[in-house]
Amino acid sequence: MPKKKTVDSLERLCLEYVADTMEDIWARAYTDSYLDDGRSPDALGPFIVLPDLLLQELFQLVKNKEPLTSAVLRLFLVPQLKKLDLSSCTHQVSESFAQTIAARCKKLSTLDLYRCNEVPAETLIHLVKELPSIVKLGLSETQCNTQVLVAIRSCCSQLRDLDISGCANLSLDSVLHLVYDPAGGSLCCQSLQVLEAGPSSLAVNMEDCVWILVFVLLALPKLELLFHFFVAEAVCLIHSQQFGSSQILPGFPSLEKLAWWRRTLDLPREESARLTLRLREVQHIEEPSLPLVCAVCPHLEEVSVILRGRPGWSQSFSSCGSISRLSLYARECEDLRALLPVLESLGPQLRSLYISGFCFIDRFSFHVLLRHCVNLQKLSIYFCSPLVYSHGEGQPDFAALDWDFRLPPLQFPWLHEFSLTYADTENPLPFPHVLLLEHSLQWLLTHSPYLDSLNLSHLPFDLDQLFYNVLVPPSTALLHLSRVTLEEVYASLTSVHLLLISQNELSYLKLLLCSEIHQMEYERILDRVDAEGFDLEVEWG
Image 1 (tube, rainbow, N blue to C red):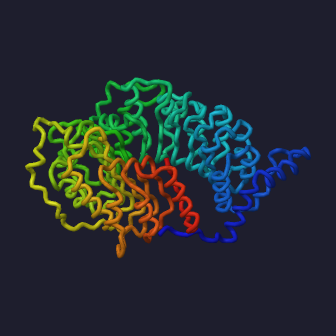
Image 2: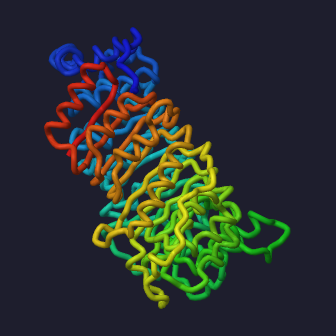
Image 3: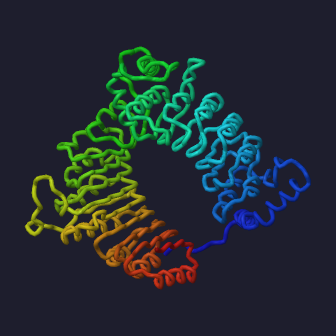
C-alpha cells in the first residue's frame, strides 16, 4: 500500500512554519523594519543567516503554497544565494527587482528568468555583468537582445548553459555575436556546453538559418547540446564541408576559415581530417540523414528520428553505435517488424526508447520488441491499429494467423518508467491483438521490479483484470511503483483498491476520463486516502 504520512523532522517543521507565515509575519516585519523607517530598500532581510541549501528548500516550500509577492521574493535575495528560479513568478519580477538581484546575489551560479519580460534589455545587461559566477542562465521569452548577448560573451566566462529561445528581440544571427567578437577578432563563450537558441519571432529563412547554426557549431568546441529545429541539417552541411556559398555577416570569419581552425583544434597534426562535433543529442533527424549525423557526431547519446516510409530505412541505423536514448516518429503507420532489426542491434545498449506510429501485425512482434530491450530504463510506446496499415500488401487475414499466447519469459530489471498509449482510437484493435497486448503488458508489469512510473492511455481492454492478475496476493510485483496515470481506460474502483492494498510507494495517482470512475468514486477514493493516512496525491478529471 502507499506510504503513510510521517512526522517531519524538526528542521522541516520549522521551515513549514516559516513558509506558512511568510506573508503575514516575515514579509510584513521586513517591510516595517526597513522601508517604513526610511532605510534602504536593498537592506538584507532575516534570511541572511540561512545557508544556501535551507534557503533553497524554504523557497521551494513558499512557491508551492501560494503566489509569491514582490515583498516575499525580496527576502530570498541574499548574498549566499547560488540558485534562483523565477519562472513561476514572472509577474513579480520587475526592473527594480532585477536590479536588486544584481546588487545582492553576486554568487549566483544558476538563474532562470523564463518569461520575465518586464525586465528591459538595459537592466538585463547590467544584471549579467554583475554575475561573474553564473554557470546556467535562462533568458527564454525575455527582452534579451543582441546587446545582452554581447554582455554575456564579455562577462560570463564560466557560462556552460544558456537558454535564449523565444526572445522577440533576437534573430538567429544575433547568436553570432554571442560566439564571436568582431572588434577583437576572437571566438567567445568557449566553455558553453548547452545552448537553446530558437525559435524567435524575427524570421530567418531556412538556408540562412542553417548556415548560422553551422557557424555556431564550429565556433563552440565544447558544445554538447544545441536546441534548434534545423541542427540536423547544419550537421549534414558540416559533413559535406561545402562552405563556398555561405554568407556570414561582415566582420565574421568565413566558414572555411572556421572549419580549418576547428579541424586543427581537434587534430592539430591532421589538417585534412574530417570535422567532428561533441554533440550528445540531436533532434528532428530525417531518417536518410542519420548516418551523416552519426559520422560527424561520434559521441551521440540521444537522437529523435523521423521516418517517412522509405524502403529499407532500418539500414540507416547501422552506424548508431553510441546511441542510448532513441525516439522514432513514423509519419505513416509502420509495421513493427521493420523496427526489430534495429532493436536487435541497438537494444542491449538502449536506456530509453520512444516509438510512435507503429502497429504489430506479426503475432509476436510486440513481445520481440520487449525481448530486444531488456536493459531499458524508460519505455514509451504510441501504437496504431494494423487495420490502417497499407504498404501494398493488402489487409492481413487475422483469422488465418496461427496465434499462440504462450510467451517466453522476460525480465526487465532496470525499467523505471513505462508508458503505453493506443493512439488510433478511431480504428478498433483486432481481438487477437488485444489479447497479445494484454498478455505482454501483464508480463512486463509483473517482471519489472523497479518500475516507479506507469502511464496507460486509451487501452482497449479491462484494466481491472490486468491489475488483478498482476497484484493479487501473494504477488510481489510493482513494489517501487510511485506514480500512476490512467487516461481514458476501463478502470473502476477495483483497480484503485488493488493499488491501495498492494505493497508499493504510490505517491501520485491520476485518473483522467476513466469510464467507471466518476465524482462519487473520486470522493470515495479521497475519503479512503484520508482515513488511511496515505501520503498520496489523487487527481481526477
